[in-house]
Length: 488
Ligand SMILES: [Fe+2]
Ligand SMILES: [Fe+2]
Image (cartoon, rainbow, N blue to C red; front, side):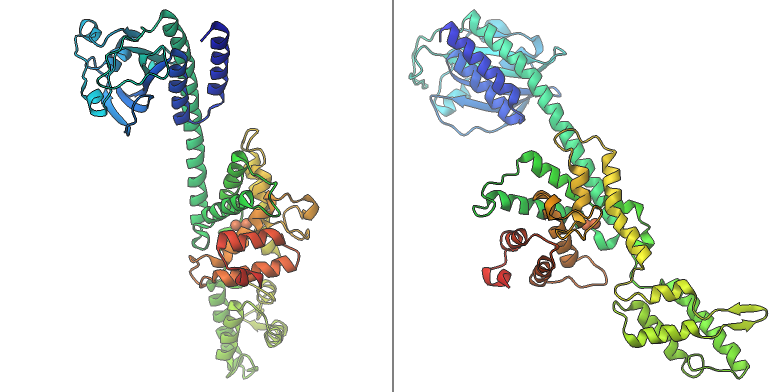
């Protein structure tokens, strides 16, 4: 390699090294680059952690053999161990040198087991910016001719590693060591962030048995749908969510309901229109009223011989999800029932807030309670905006908060319509509904079949809430429904 091509090669390697974000790939790249630049036949790279040498990766241009990772203590019994302990580069022109240098005999059993022969070796310590050795590079058998094959029987006169080889590999090794340390630190930070996010998400979901596991499932299914978009060769053939976009979606999905922390549990976990305590209070009141009226010979329809029916009807209404006309008439009668005066106290049969709760037409939440629950999406945004997500994850707060948006603009918290909802923002609204319907961990409600849940997604498409093509892709590629099932 002449000087100019060497210089070009070095700057090329430098750039490649600085772009590599994966520790394993970085190690491979360091080794392969040093082998190429020195014209070596083989080489190995070790990392050093807690006084252990970890064999990471090996390359051999002459023989093929399965390589396994292994570890050994850093000690003066091995060539690499000496390199770590003495922080020194060793240029072994012959393997006999080990006797004079370290007082050890080079162990040839590995070479013999793979049919190879180590003739000379350059051993380089990889030092980080603190001067600690965090890895060792072994370059083996420098060759003039790249085509030469070395075997255990080879009796070759190989060139020695030069001072320039030492210089170049030393500078590459120290650059590599710094990058390796930086990459490890980044990976540690990423792992820390990931584990904190998933722990937080699990803890939040577990506050409520109804939602245990919900966020994790929403995250997994959202990623599956995003990957299905990436793989699609039809409508989405030009769309590709890169690693950063997928990560942003994953984190947003794990934390999409974080805002529920700002909604009282009594509302989040509300199962009936009135709590059991409230029902008990009303029942006691009704018995008292019946008793008073009975003593006065003033019994009325609801508080006479029909008292048991009155109480049963009231409990049934509290549990129902849909209010019938006869229920409304019953509640109006109770609300309009004359107050009962007793020992200077006026007893109101049904208080206004009780009446309002029982008069809920659909579901069991009052308008005020529904508003409070819906605010969780806003709270998610507020909470997540307090975190510095950096450039690559900057959309997490908005993406997470948009999981109840609808294409027709009737969603919350922003009421964004089709023109303002990006493709990635249309994913979670589908998954959130699907998981709520199919979740098996609801204590009082059996899980819905995936076919039925998909049919409901179909209605949501028809009423303009969800993206038609995305729902189709979800049914086919993620849920795995057959054509005839998801066509309906
Ligand atoms: Fe939500
Ligand atoms: Fe959710």
